[in-house]
Length: 180
Image (cartoon, rainbow, N blue to C red):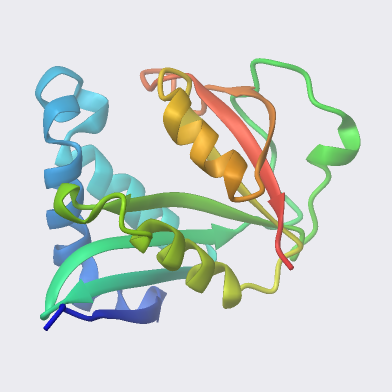
């Protein structure tokens, strides 16, 4: 019998309960990058995770099979005060205007290697967006990952430019998609 995917939605108050699982998945998925670049270290990710979870209306969808975390997607709502830092390419002013409900910042979508290519990433992504009240989703894809960018394009995202939100981090393709 095939193992069934269990998906659960969490908000900031659940972070202490699920944080270890999120970090374990991250440490496996980014093991190679973390070996050569401190930006991808588990410690730096944990800092980013906690900062993101402190953001407005943080939400996370955790996917498990037989009680083991195999992937997740999370993000938070941008507020009207958000300033688009790290833009490398100019974007039309109307794209950069924020309200408290305009943009959901999708920070992470990741699935352990053994489960990639099974549709789980899309399932987690769509489940997360189904809980959102924002008009659109924004995500970043490393410039040197064209296959990942193409995947997000198939999911309805369009490239809006290039960003480098962290001085010691990679450059990213900035992408937007409406949330139906």
